[in-house]
Image 1 (cartoon, rainbow, N blue to C red):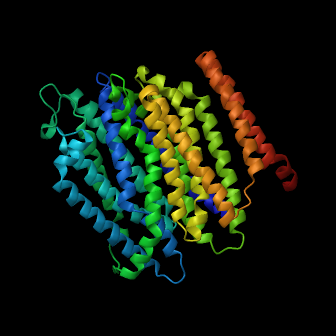
Image 2 (cartoon, one colour):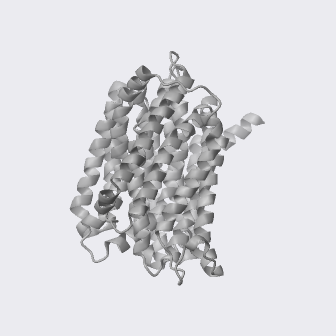
Length: 492
């Protein structure tokens, strides 16, 4: 139980930074959509370019983040050598990527549809290369159990990004101040400045890692790197397939959708999905804490029992978050000031359900990482990715971004189920499936009632009804897994 308490504590710290950071980052949605209200397609540009950078992050880290945890926890390896070897490897490939992009910038920008703005592509790709390198010192902080510094760096980046966006989009135009010739005579906003701001934030915040990058001897072990790469390359395929599940729809949507204004539709989807990303915050916070926890606990006798309990409580608390978002949708929708975008809010429950399955899949994925058979991850994620691609290609032309949401749902469901059934053969864990499915069934019924409440009642009555429905879930949770009465009786 003490292990779960430690996991919960670290998850809480990572969660505070992730949730607070994402919440502040959410401010960019109303800020940017309001700034470009007259041209909804501008936000579609941001959504599209960021989808490319998310994919590149996976390619440029090529599974070395997880490989670092695996090898740093092996008794026969020197953790410092593992760390410096990983730093040099990822740093070298990131630098090579920057040189490659700058050399072939014109054809790359043309392929992406931004031939008139190759600087946007250059800035964002340099930024993503720096971010990929930063993943390794971030991983070192997690390995060293220093979540507070991890959280501080994450939040610094977010707050600086929001501050600079507000300054550029509103404060300077309002004051009619034009430093460095950022605007024309009419103070026209340039969507490309969003990417320059991102690069500035990434570069400045990177300086906070100086203690993790200097003051020790760098050792580059070629034999170690080869073993790490053998372990990591299936994780690269897994990561590409996984990130395609999140970004493929946003990348190909302009090519698939047959409607008149694909970028405007993508703007709606990109903005409303931000609300669903509350679930991604929770799964990300759990991942930050769980990855070093699992590899560090692999040698313990009760590890499988602990993994089973962690899975159960992960599902419970993500379902609770799901209900909170659905129940208070009438409040959360005001994150998006452009009411024309509210039609897209119907994708939120679907995307959140997909994120829960992604989190479950992440939990399940450790069986093949612990037995060094990471190729299975490539198989599962590849199958899920194929399902997602098929749904998008077949249905997006007719059903627009609704097909994107269901494609992600189907893709994650496929990967999750495959990993569970194959994992029970090679690394059996006695997950409390009956208890988990009871919670899932209850959450499904309550969420259906909440959606009906949102649809047929006025905002305030709907919030009241949904609060009562949420309390039903909490009451069941307390009775079933947090028996307060027994605890008080025991204390007495």
